[in-house]
Image (cartoon, rainbow, N blue to C red):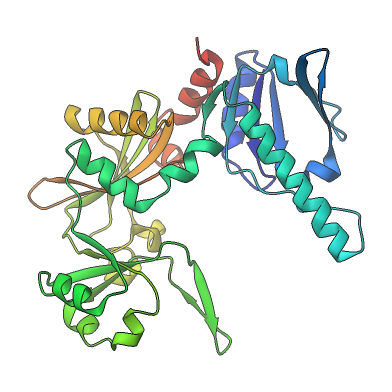
Amino acid sequence: MILILTNKGDIHPNPVIEKLTEKGVKVFRFNTECLLSDYIVSWECKNNKTDFILKNKITQAEIKGSEIKSVWERRPEKPNQSDIENEQIKKICLDEAKGFLIALQYYLKDKFWIGNAIYDSVASSKLLQLKTAIDIGMKVPDTIHTNNKQQLDDFLNSQNQVVIKSLETQSFDIDEQNHIVFWTRKHYKTEILNYPENAVNSTVNFIQEYIEKKFELRITVVCDKVFACKIESQHLEDDKGKTDFRQGYEGIKYSAYELPKNVSNSCIEYLKLMNLNFGCFDFIVSPNDEYIFLECNPNGQWLWIEQETGLKIADTIANYLIKGNS
């Protein structure tokens, strides 16, 4: 039995569930935001033994913890539905349900996982990502995180163009106008050198050298299987996909790409060091054909890659979930 932890709006599990069903494997999809509305859960410790039962009240599907071979964590969400009208009591009920969900994920730590609550949050650290990439011999951009004006100026003076990135903020509203900061933005160093000191020290700023691209790569790794997609974005304008390809999905050509063996092996090694079985890597290939690591999302999106290129990512995920720890 395969347990999939996800949410109602996520389409990524669909092709994997289809592959598993074709192979005769039972699957239980747990849309975690609906824990209190759509599911009955019972975990118990009795006679020095532990187990749990999770039942979908709508479909009547049921799973026992002792039956689970593998777990796929595909962006679960905290419980968000409750019939309680009192807002303070409702918050307590939802917080308790969230606490149980986290405890259940940790309880299943000895199963085979693709995605993992324990390791994914650690592996999301951009600082740790760059250090790990360097440790295994990958080339990375010069980078600074700082709230010190002098250190920032020293960094900028060693560059011509840089990119400003966001660690957490997706967007914000000022005067009823929405500003998206999710995209990577390119600047000449002179633009930032003129920032006043109080603008710099008001937060920790994330800035990298800008590296010209021949093309970009999205590399999806499932255990020891590597799928590379070439992203041809450099014919676009800077703010329409050239700097950040996510701004220009419709105007970009995608194709399967054969990676050099050393790059494939480095990605596999990276996942092992991070205790992961899955990761979506973003690389730049420079005009000099250097492969430059940008980041690795431990639970990134991949379905669009499969749809654009035909790479068999869903089938590979299904096969590894079936294989489990064996």
